[in-house]
Structures are given as C-alpha cells and as structure tokens.
Length: 183
Image (cartoon, rainbow, N blue to C red; front, side, top):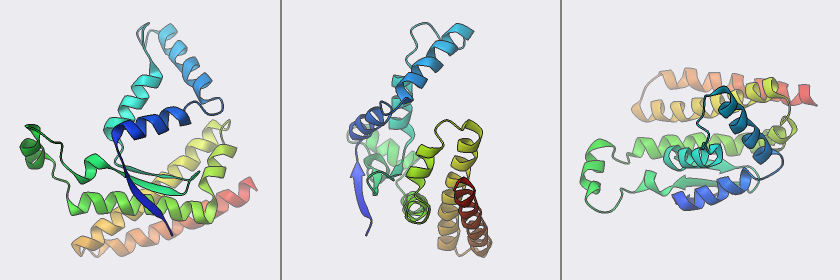
C-alpha cells in the first residue's frame, strides 16, 4: 500500500531543509555558493540554500520520498489560494483533473521504481559519481515523465499512449541494467 497525503509549502520547506543538511549536501551547497560568488555569478550575499528552498516551495507539485515510502501532493495543486486572487487563479491555472492525474502518475512511477530498484539506495550510492548520478537521475525522471504522459494521453484517448508505455518498458529494462552494472 502506498501512503498518499497532502503537503503544504511550509512542510515541504522543512522537509527539504532537513534533507539538504544530510550527509555532505550542506557542505557542497556552501562550496557551490562560494564558487559562484568567486566567479561573479552570484552576489556576495547569495544564499543558495534559501534560493533552493524557495524554488522548491514554488515549483514542486508532488513528490515520492523513497526514505519513507510516502507520496505527497502539494496543497496548491489541489486547491486555489484563498482571498482576492482565487478568482484570477481559477481562470489562469485551474487545478485540472489532468494536472493532478499527471502528478500522481509520475510519483506512482517513482514508488514503483523504488519498489523494484531501491532508487533511494541507488541515489545514495552515486553521491560522488557526478556523471553516473546525473545519468541515473535522468533515467529515473524520464521514466516517471513517460508514465505521467502515458496516463495523460490515455485519458485523452490518444493511441500514442501505447508507444509511450513501450518506451517505459524499455526504460525499466535499462534501469535494471544500470542496477546490475552498479552491482
């Protein structure tokens, strides 16, 4: 059974801040900030941690946490903001069945990946292998995108959904090969 729930922006920020303090993530983020400042890419008062947390609060629609096995949708995906902006929000970006379904399908694929390939352990094992970890993350996210898109196309009755499911099967086989390779 998959534990599915709703997260608020402050709850996501708290969780992400704790995750970014695990292991050497905080040290690497501080190092990246200093490097960007030295190169003149970031201003002297830049705070990469705060900027990352703010970006996550604004952009994340849902997530699957392989450490806890929980899937969370963000509350802003499910309901409009309260107050004067709610009417404008409904006109500009309504919380459609398709949006929620896509996010759920995408995150359920992550749960299935974790069930079959232990993606949390896999990602932890690749922490210092930048090219391999980037490639593995692209495979993991690409597979989940295919799942979300296939769901969306199937809802629309588009025959191309079958082709996407075949691509997803190919990605599953490729992920199995990567797991075996890493041994």
